[in-house]
Image (cartoon, rainbow, N blue to C red; front, side, top):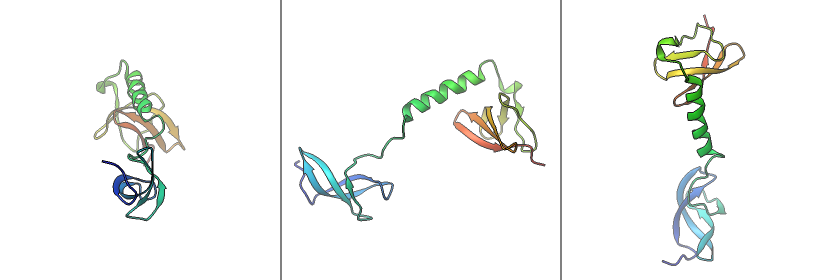
Length: 129
């Protein structure tokens, strides 16, 4: 099917931050170049899919490798249970009732800690009475 100006196509709207119906405004070499979002009226270069984050694939691979390296030789039995009133140090293994087994990777402002869990990095409170 040949693309024509005025036809409709699904595409990523940077203003709406959603895949929306767009009206084709410009076609070159059989590809949509510019389109107008039917929802917000924004005119922009046509994108069929949402943009990927920088290094999205590499970051997920890095996370899995980092998590495995930090947990090497540790088990849930050796981890301390998480509590807001407890204090933790960088490198401590932490067992959270919902998030699972994690490792403290950084301390912020003495009241917050970064913990790497299987699902990703989380910021939790510590030292609260």
